[in-house]
Length: 141
Image 1: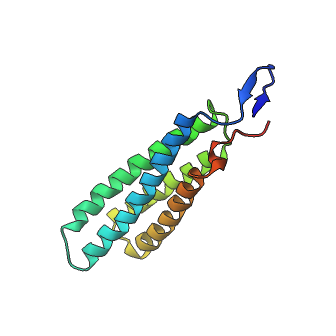
Image 2: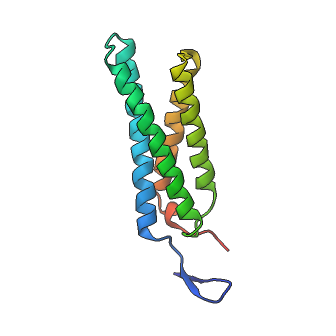
Image 3: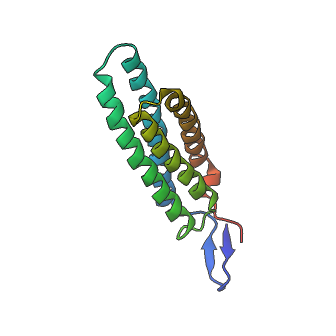
């Protein structure tokens, strides 16, 4: 189904598949990395100290992935014609990952652990949404 733009040109009702595929890949990868962060943290606190380094590298990777998610969401929104809500949620992910890294670096575990659980929930919801047909729809004019 096509829609007519203000200039009278016909625009597709769906966002380009490449943009959606990129968003889906980075959103799912982010959620997987955040889950692996919980695994590496659990192994560390049970005495396998070597997993602390893995946890630190995972934090850096999570940071890169949420930035990639934000970029993909912006491309889906502006040139892609999607809505802005996924951009706002990606900004929330970036803020949570930065806060999480700061709390972890300062060893504030009473906040770091629950925020990690919340972060996993947010990234999982984003990944699930990104994989639905709604993610590929253009914004209503």
